[in-house]
Length: 223
Length: 126
Image 1 (spheres, rainbow over the protein chains, first blue to last red):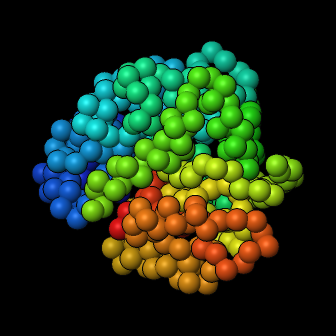
Image 2: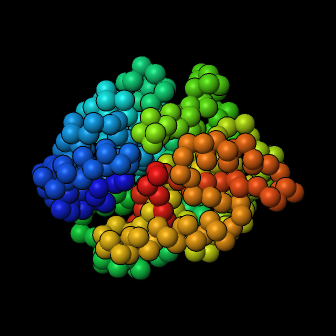
């Protein structure tokens, strides 16, 4: 469960909002209840301090289901090495995400590539000293992504996370170019596995990256 | 293994002629109402971490959204809502070529994001 989505609520701050106040008392109670129920807490979309507070508070490991290292792709939606390290030390998983705007590196203008995405995985693996605490998220859609005009909350006032991407690659939210050059169709997942093997990951590690690592954590939390 | 489809509106994926050996759990994606639900087990994905409900939904709306996913799984024999790790492993074991129709393949699991606005989805790992 993601306690907040980009903007601040009663539980904690969102990553794109104006404050970075951390977990509220009510939010702390929600974390405790999630632990009791075996719900997996997901810190993606949360403010910096909120995610660190939750990692510290939670008795169970937490995940970032779809965030990339800010050290490689400096986007407001990505996460710092401090957040990654805290999550890893508590046994959590970082789900690297193949959404183009979160893979695009500052100063580049090309369509982000599969290799640049794998570099995000490499970065987390280097920090963890293992590939056992990494997963993969696509942020792809099945079916037609609706126009943003349907947003029932109106246009957000927080910072844009894809303005540069829209300028240089595509601003069409339905375009396959919102994913990666080399991974923009689910059927390419076998190619992703092949590329990971070429880059030196073992077959067992690739099984873990594609799903086994998450299953191991879910088994621990859902039992 | 697959021919990539032309996707003028995005969100439509190729189907694999043969499954690959990896259990793939996508920890963030979205499924929209016009998705080809009958083919969801043929894209090479074992478990989709779909969005449970929209950000800022009321409790009633959130419960209704989650029940929508259970209804979706009841309507599509190739889908199930994962309630355990075994459900996901079983989905991988039973996925196969398009000719076998009695399988439950892709699971809707996880509990993830909504990249924006009108996301339907489910989740909450059990």
